[in-house]
Length: 178
Ligand code: S3P
Image (cartoon, rainbow, N blue to C red):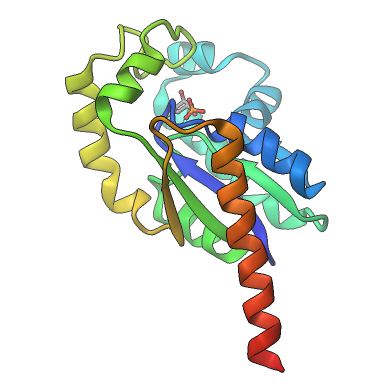
């Protein structure tokens, strides 16, 4: 199945790029964090504070486990930690093109400085903390099919890059068959 799965650290633009890409392709946009909030009946902050991260991760994996039920092609904007569980990465690979959005730690830190809805970085998103988490998560992010650096780029341009990749993929598939 050829969906698009957007992975990447917090603040790399997954939801924004997903919105534009959904508009360009006409595909459905699924926002994993929003699905978890709906299922959990509480905000991400509340889920982390009241139930703890393992509970949040279990909800996240449960939502990911249900993605195969979608028959329309979709763009999935994941949460930054959704790639941490190996079984989630297997499902993502199975579902479609995995696109990892990246940005250097200082860019992420600046983008998230005023964010208060990311429990893992609500204390100001210090560059050092971002850098450490990025280093820990890198083996999970690097499994993607393509990686796109978003620093200094417009959301529309990142979405266009992904679209170009999708179109090229389809064209070369036809050529290979012909
Ligand atoms: C998380 C990223 C968040 C959200 C939760 C945990 C993470 O999503 O799922 O706060 O572990 O990186 P965004 O990447 O959309 O901010």
